[in-house]
Length: 434
Image 1 (cartoon, rainbow, N blue to C red):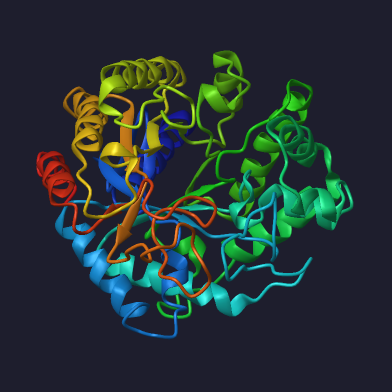
Image 2: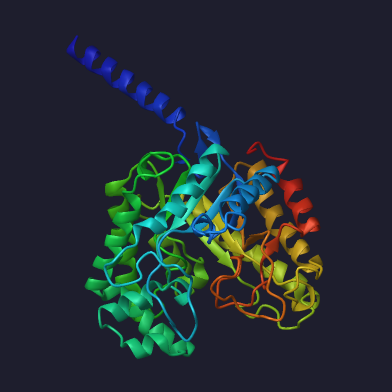
């Protein structure tokens, strides 16, 4: 009788847990899929890294009003997922370029928490629209301060080294030190704790209880940078994922990697760092221009090769996702406008063809309940436009998809790119994520 009663309570507990999971408004992982309320969640999203900064703009037309207008625009086109910068560090030049302004941690250990009110507002408005955010908490690259800033603050590199324009080898040598810098990691954890444990000013909901957040991402494109840093990198990714889970078990955690290209070009390492149970899904980024997959300014001449390489890259990592039984997100991919123009008036024929190829791989996964669960194109510029006669961003300019160190208009998708939005709507309309 005791055995029967025990079994009965185990069954009731299991059923209760199943029902709780089924009713969860949070994005969860079930086998190789994302689910919301126990229904598959496949999405086309975008990178909107500056979304948490818009509400801070004093001119409401360029700030809160712009933000709401753009969220409505995205929602109307079926774009339900936004990848957003949450943590930024330092001021002034880094690696010879200006960085994002304003920054959350402008001085070592000093946080301007009023800046997080912009992120509060973004999440508040996203929640109204049943959209989901992926928040990346720092950066491997210099455009938001990131790892180089932590290294400089803790004297692991000199301030002059951080500010100077580094060649590729020097950048790799210096950035790779982050993973073995205990003081740097301690500082990183302080910033992460501040963000994860925040209560939203507008919704009054603690971030850890907010379904508008889909996932925490350790950083934008964290790489070991040097083979000698691989073991420290593996330890950092695993321990930081566990650290976030210890504070917040409602939300997913991912690393933010570029895929095999960002893990010492090793499929084995890419698989290893995504193996731990506290890491919920895999990511990959595809940058044909940066990876020299094409060189001609027409872009069109090398497009067939770019598409073939991109498709192979997705499939290669999809096999690893299938093996790990976790979802995979193509969370960055982009291409310049035709003839490498930065002008919003330039055509996007090559880009549209490229996007169609990426979305088609995603659509195959939707149809077959596969592991390629999401696509976040890089990136959305909304109503912003480049300043005529000016190549790079200056403080006071409207934010757009291209970070300050890149030519404004390089990879940005504007709200005026009608052919691109028609294409996106075609794919999103075929899913149930509306």
